Length: 474
Image 1 (tube, rainbow, N blue to C red):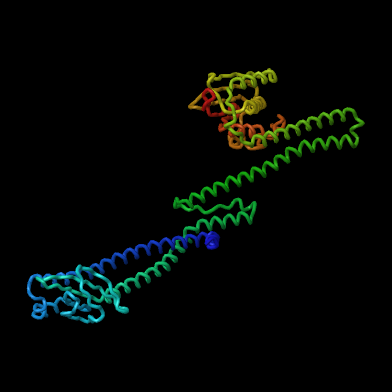
Image 2 (cartoon, rainbow, N blue to C red):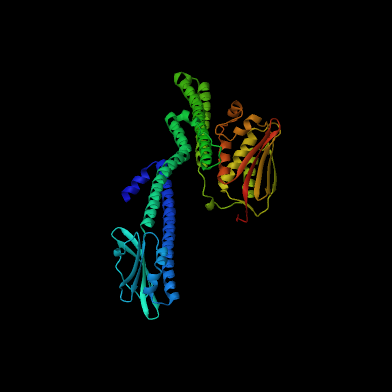
């Protein structure tokens, strides 16, 4: 049995569906036919019993009504008994001792059944070789005379009809097995067809590797589970393709960003190695530039490490909610010292009961990135606003500057890694395009959201949205 079950589990889905659907159909068909056969057989047998019992009752009533010597009445009314005796039946009258006093046969020999008197009425099945007989024995009494009415009916026709019915049921069952198997196979193939299409698409994706990422499963517009599965698969492939291109772009950008300072450092060291070390001016200039590029290289590596840490999602159940006001105040104080020519305005409509579920370190890191970005790209109007309010169960925090703004075409991409709206100007401001990507991942890791609004020549505002915690309880 275990071997059969193991083999069944290894079959393709088409054959599994075919076998199980056929088995279920045959089981239902067999159960229905068996019940129908039983009901029909029982009903026909009861009909035979009713007919032979009626005949016995008529004969008994005849004897009771005449109230005369039964032997005399039988002789005088033999035609009556002949009219009651049907085909394949005999009627036999016995005396008290079981002796036969009268017999009438109609294509059924009375010698097949031994005569037997009785005191109670009963009915029984009796077999004479291959012939099936139904026998009823009924006692009667007229004055002092006692006897037994014995009637036997051959059920050969009844059995033949049952055999014919059973034969057609079996034949129908075989036909049902064939048709259900064929129908189950056809239906199974139709059901599995979408899966086959998906498998073929996956095999093409695997064989074609990078080029195969653009392949998609044909959508089925019947709104069933397979259609939903195909849509989910295509969505997954879209995300995978985007991730692949982002990874590829990340490697290219990282290589470019790292290659530039390394090339500069290598150029200055080569210059010093050839003849620059004998010239104090060239030596000083090369060492200064090489040191700046080394710091820039270190900054890139540190931001890459921060980005990799930001990719790790924290366990939010272990995060202790913080109040944002102290962290914001601390960061603004530090920036006010670093950039005394800037003005930092705050409008924080938050009371002491408003908390957000984020670590203080990460919240401070996000503020540092957004404020540093605002400072770098502010124009002549060196004013930065920090706004905060509670709205519909969320804390909204906005960092707004009045700088050069971001082109509209660049807004959807500014949270991508290494993306800079103006690469030449960003390099001059020591930017590598990782800060906003880090901030975005940190915010989303804590179930928050961040979006940007900007107009060129007017300014830019970044708004963070965190779920509010009331007194540390959600």
